[in-house]
Image 1 (cartoon, rainbow, N blue to C red):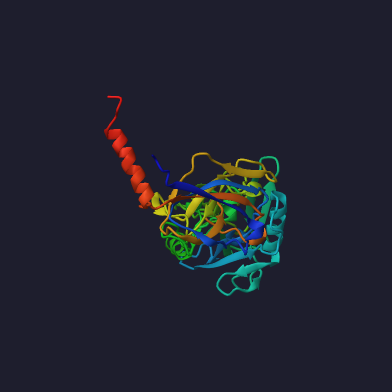
Image 2 (image 1 turned 60 degrees about the horizontal axis):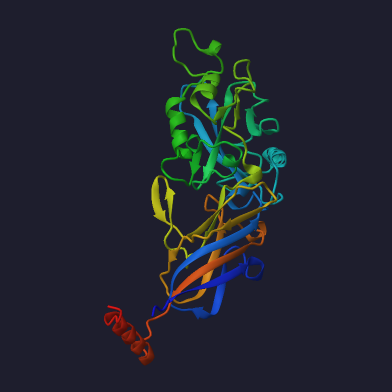
Length: 381
């Protein structure tokens, strides 16, 4: 006689019955005993998640200013700025967010160091004009910079997009995907920090000429605004006095590819500190442990349902064999927590495998002995 000791318990979850923020807990009052493994069987969620939450609600950049472009001295200074988009709708289309960002560039800019809001200035000079646009024909974003009131090469400014805490955020959504070409604020050492960029400018750009015709006779290999904008930097742009070489087009930068902002995540991670024990996530070419329980690919247009269903569970070994409570978190493809206000209600089913302990009761022992006797004394021999 063969006794199947493996049993399966199914927990069906609808988040509207449980959710308290994104990090909610499911209680199992009677407990699940002798649990060995768990797996995600199915998951469904409407593809209506907002696209301006958490790190996606701020846009960072750094500006550098040189007192005199042709002074030949190290007189660059730098400041970090950002705009806050937490007050805009949770979901925006490309044309909407381009207009909102452009408006905020005018007078709703935060100084990163002081937290004050206003215009992005170093002192009493005029702020840098930053135009931010979306092209509906090829689904790309573009920005350009101008110092329209500048008449001399004094107070020349440089604009550089920045990522914050290793997250390119909205810049990536807009198609600016070469993150190593950006400045990293509070980020890993392989990103160039604002201080490193400033040091580089003061070491290598003590003199920069507005035009080729401004370079004194006999000097070779001198840098001009146009050369910097076209040959040296991918996203960083120098403005200065407008001239016929450093045109508006040269002072602009186009995104590398199409925008993904309107359907911004490639997959969702269903995570649990209690249940997600066996998965690993590759970060910077290194696999590190993670609490991911399952992945839901985003292969549907906006406002459709996203579904995950499997008949071949990806089992996770449980560290605690008695389950009385567990947590669930939903994160996007970059590991960002999705706030409750941006997360629609979802359905999911978890499978728990339990294993019965061997029962050594008298009747079972007698049955095993009978079966052994029959096998050993096969009367058909």
